[in-house]
Structure formats: C-alpha cells, structure tokens
Length: 403
Ligand SMILES: Nc1nc2c(ncn2[C@@H]2O[C@H](COP(=O)(O)OP(=O)(O)OP(=O)(O)O)[C@@H](O)[C@H]2O)c(=O)[nH]1
Ligand SMILES: [Mg+2]
Ligand SMILES: [Zn+2]
Image 1 (cartoon, helix red, strand yellow):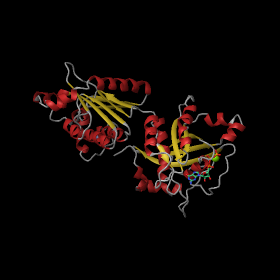
Image 2 (cartoon, rainbow, N blue to C red):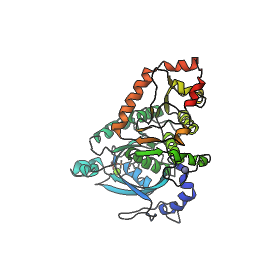
Image 3 (cartoon, rainbow, N blue to C red):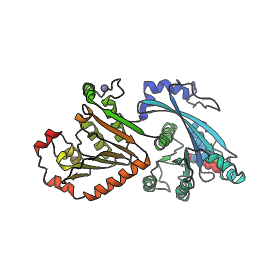
Image 4 (cartoon, rainbow, N blue to C red):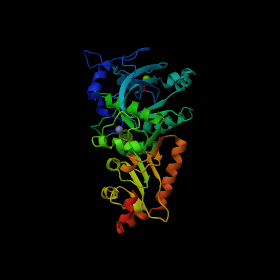
C-alpha cells in the first residue's frame, strides 16, 4: 500500500469520479471557468495552488497550460498578453483520502512584465509554486532554470518548484542529455516533467504537477500512540486490514510503511532494534529502486535471531553496526532529508502490538535538520564497525530475551 496510487484513477472509485473531468460524449477534458467546480461530494477536500509560469519567450508556457487543461488547439505562436489564468481540477488519492487539486496557473510573458509594473507583483503574490519552463531544443535555456528558480526564492511563502521541459522527443537524442537532467534533479531536489506533445494522455503530467507541489507544501505533524490494547489488533494484521479504532496499530504501521514507499532519494535509519519484517522489506524495496539507504543499528541487537540484519546485508544495503560500551539506543528515520519519524518505539512487532510506545512524524525543517546532521556524524564516526559484523557474526542468545 503506497501513499499515492497512480492506478487509482482506473479503480471503481476513480472511475466513478472521472466523468466529471471529461465531456461525456468525447475524450475531451471538461473546462471549469471562474466560480465553477466539479460537482464532487463536499466531503472531498479541495486543495488550491497558485502556480506562476516562468521561462523564456516562446518556450511553450502557454502551450503547456493549455495542454494540461485539455484545451490545446492551435499550434500557432502568439505571445501572451497580460495575465492568463487557468484553473485545472484533478483528483488524486493520497494515502486513504481523495484530494481534489485545483491548480490555478498564472501565465504571462516577458513583454507584459516589462510593459506593466504591476504584473510581476500580482503573479508573485501568495504564490504556492513556481513552474520553470525550458525547451529540450535549447540547451542554453536549460542553464537558466536554476536562475529562474532562485529569483523567486526571496518570496516569503517559499513557493515549491516545478520544472517542465517542453518539446521532449523520447525517440531522438536531445541537446540536453539524460545525465544532465538527472544531475539537475539531484542537485535541486525537483523532478523534471517532460512534455512529449505526441503523447495523447496528460494524466501523468497533471498528476506529477499536483503531487510534487503537494509534497513540498504539505505540513506533516503526526503523533501515534501504541498501547497495551494494540495487541488486540494483531489478529487483523495478517491480512493488513485496519479496524475502526483511530489508534489501530495496523493503520499506523501501514502509514510508516507508506513513508518508506514514498521515499525518492534517501532513507536514513538509526534504530536500536529493527525486527519488523513489513518495514524491513519496505526498506530493502527502497534500496532496490535506487534510494540511498543507510542503516545504523546497535550491534548486539542486530545479531539477535529476530533481527533483519542478514536481509539488509544480503541485499547490499549499507549498514553500520555499532558496538560500544554504551547503547546505540536511537529510534529515528529520516525520509528524503525532509521528514523525521522518531519516538520511543523500536521497529519491532512487540513494540507495535502491546507496548506503551509513541512515534512522532514531522517535516518541520527546524526539527528535521539536526537529525540530518546527527545521522551524518554518526555514520562517519562508526564507519569501521560494519566489518565487525561480517567478521564476527556471533550471537549472544541471552540478548533475545530482552526483546
Ligand atoms: N513541438 C512542440 N511545440 C511546442 C511545444 N510546446 C510549445 N510548442 C510550440 O511553441 C510555440 C510557443 O509556445 P507558447 O506556449 O505560446 O510560448 P510562451 O512560452 O507562452 O511564450 P510567451 O507567451 O511569449 O512568453 C507555439 O507555437 C507552441 O505550439 C512542445 O512541447 N512541442
Ligand atoms: Mg505565452
Ligand atoms: Zn486495529
């Protein structure tokens, strides 16, 4: 179960909503004008983002918005005059709820910005995201993208960044190599959305825009409590079902799993005891899809029978097993250097199903940053300890009793 499911639109629930977004008789998208919105149940949360399009003249800003809105008709170029506002509604299922995104694109042109002093301030006011557009035809324009993103960095709301490359032709080699795009994505922590005009469906493009902004704007502060009663839920853990209890540990566990599933770049795990198979498998899966996973564990706990150490080791996940005169007693995980999951809870089944324990999840920068620094420090400090496990995997069986 992942936090977001791209295939959800094809599910019964997804299909039941989709007709609101298309004109019945054709495959054409339905356009919603000012004050209009799709007639979805009011229980569905609507999230509005104001997105300001920036990029060189003629690069395809207006064409991209029209394409995403499903209203692209002519390919004749006319410079945009003034500000053009376009609302695009799109539903996405995130975790266990459907969110209706209202993407409000603000599109203008360099000439308009120069001509009228008030256009740029109006576009920047309360903006949620800056959409920088470049063309795969023009390598020099791509060099400008960091500059485009940086000119907006002073805005106090700290807009999210999305980057769109137009005129992408998957079948021919482009002037901008994949390696350069990848390097850019890693450096600036954004995904480049490639627009291939020959691809008829724009679903993944709209999805990428919505989800990318959501991820950077989302405010995470979660608290989970595990109690003695959590043990009652162990029976429905087998089929991964949650019950109606708000504090159902299976729900919490699946939530933790979803954080690991949504990791795209790095996953740092520092955990005294890590025996939970569900979460261990999710960590290995992340490693397999290219996420930079690093795990620090206490050597003695890592050598118990229940520990998943050999699973990590056999899959080539980088490990540091710390053997010290004091315990490596931390329980924290950092997702993409942006989210911290921490608390009293070891990632073991006994902790999730029967201990009094807690977990806090946050993406508050001021809290996350010290964990990032501390993890790096620990990783460097214990750089030699992994060999110890490989050389002497002896297990003190008396340790298992303390689990
Ligand atoms: N082949 C191809 N043509 C595109 C693509 N995107 C845009 N174009 C064409 O490029 C031209 C310029 O597009 P616009 O969207 O008007 O450019 P703009 O960035 O809005 O330009 P200004 O309004 O002057 O700032 C138009 O003729 C589009 O049809 C694309 O992905 N592929
Ligand atoms: Mg334009
Ligand atoms: Zn339950």
